[in-house]
Amino acid sequence: MTAELVAGIDSSTQSTKVVVCDAETGEIVRTGRAPHPEGTEVDPAAWWDAFGEATNGLLDDVKAIGVGGQQHGMVTLDEDGEVVRPALLWNDTRSAQSALDLIDELGGPSVWAKSVGSVPVASFTVTKLRWLADNEPELADRVARVLLPHDWLTWKLTGGDPVTDRGDASGTGYFSPSDNAYRLDVLSHAFGGRTPELPTVLGPAQAAGHTADGVLVSAGTGDNMAAALGLELKPGDVVVSLGTSGTVFGVAETGAADATGEVAGFADATGRFLPLACTLNAARVLTATASMLGATLSEFDRLALAGAPGAEGLTFLPYLDGERTPNLPGATGSLSGLTRANMTPQNLARSAVEGMLCGLAAGLDAVRTHGLDVRRVLLIGGGAQSAAVRAVAPLVFGVPVQLPEVAEYVAIGAARQAAWALASSAEPPSWQENKKALELDEPTEAQRAEGHRIQQRHLEAREAAYGVRRNLGED
Image 1 (cartoon, rainbow, N blue to C red):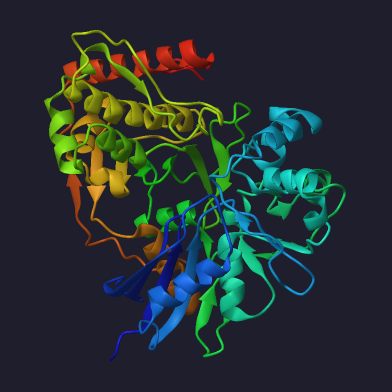
Image 2 (cartoon, rainbow, N blue to C red):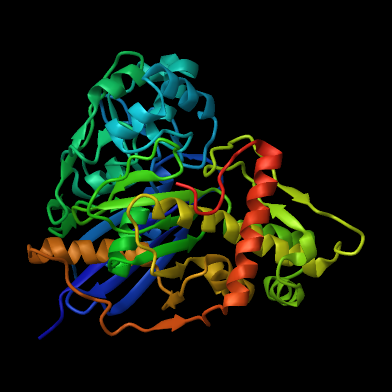
């Protein structure tokens, strides 16, 4: 019997990726890819064009499609469904002041954390809507509907009423994951007293509709939620993803409400929750440092591995694109502890790897305080392919680290959701049972102690530069 096929789409910041999978086993049978334009704002039509290019010739016998999209992006439509302005992406920080204003206006961080699970930062959709209302009022007046990137692509596929899922909706800043409901009062306050239409929130296995050719389209979800679905996370599993951004997340039965803003209290794509900490600076720290050194990535790895643990006291705060966790949108990168003795290419490369991973280690420490039992780290993303990252990660994280098979887990998660909707089953299909993961060497006690010292020095440098206080193990 011919296997039923499903497709998963990952519409990320930089590109559209597609995987076509066997709906029962998850075996990948075809893949495609197409680039997106650079920048922090983009016409959504570019995503549709990339979708067409990436899926060209791949979907002829596919029975269902799921879309995973970059979180938070603001897509604004007028009454005719036309795009009002280029979409502002998650990494556009122009709404940083708007986030601070909203926090103050609606009662402070604790009120926000309790009402929508998260304290807004520049990434969140709600802050971008405030920025639009304040800075482009003539365009804001035309906005009749607000969608997220994955919502818009799903809507283009089905041609029906716009829908979303609770996972992606939980990153807007005007949806309560604990109540499974929009906070229209928050939306109205942020958008100058207006309440544009929002997509209907579907359940995890519900279908959004069908394409013109009759292919089922699932609800879709945000990229981190799709990755969790693709990796089939279990209790004790925490993902550290090293892509354009760095993320730390795991599934939980209860939602987080972190008034410090370090942990976002997102929902996941299965009906549970997804506490998540995010950094703006991840894999591009490595590429930028390699470029500064005039080295290829493989040469950069060799330099970093030749550096001593701790880089002989050189500490790199890699806030090259500002930072989200901690919330420092105007921050820049810095090196501290420089001496004539430690100013070597090897130490600079080593400090870049350690600095990037220390930012994620602080994220691990943060999610621990919100119900996640970190028993092992699953290291994914382009940055996880670095030999230096693989050597340093167990040292800095202090727990067993595994590298799942290299794969497009956001797209796989979207495909798994599509298979779930196609089967109309109580649970999604199990695809990871026979997949292998590379287990990195566990650190010795001496190495764990060195990793702790590296983290503490990074935190001290952060406090000295920006006054952000948080010590290892603090609640």
